[in-house]
Image 1 (cartoon, rainbow, N blue to C red):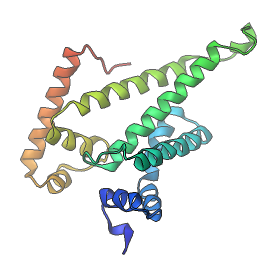
Image 2 (spheres, rainbow, N blue to C red; image 1 turned 180 degrees about the horizontal axis):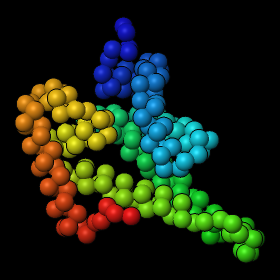
Image 3 (cartoon, rainbow, N blue to C red; image 1 turned 135 degrees about the vertical axis):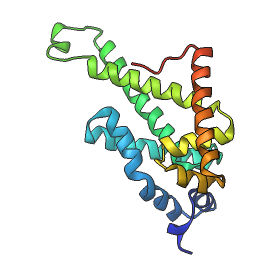
Image 4 (tube, helix red, strand yellow; image 1 turned 60 degrees about the vertical axis):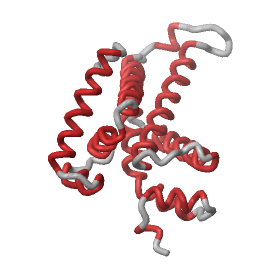
Length: 194
């Protein structure tokens, strides 16, 4: 069987049934996209590599525990795991700055540093987390179109083929998804601006 030709959900099923190689195919297929999402937030290749590995450890654990439910696409789910892993990293880093083992904090600890990049990254990560929560609250058809468009970079033609609807229907679902997200933002008092 050529695993490279299987869809993501089929690879997940193969992996759950003991075919370890199926996970390697998934990682190779989505490595660049997931890594770039992490790197865009941390702006450091070594940290991004570490967080990428941490992300896939979490993905493997979720798949083994059957915590992953196939709600559309593997990639949007994996990107959420990567986003949460990055957010956890920024939280850990901000706590390190606040607490020293000796309990002391000197002027030299912050000399020449700027908290702005970390603050900005924390804000961006929180915005991303809020956005994912809003997207998850959408009706299934709207959520799928939005995820395929935003996270997977599909054209509306590709989305129409993937979801087995006309291009006009795909465009309409995207329009409704955006409208519903705006309503949810007002209802829950969420701002997606830094």
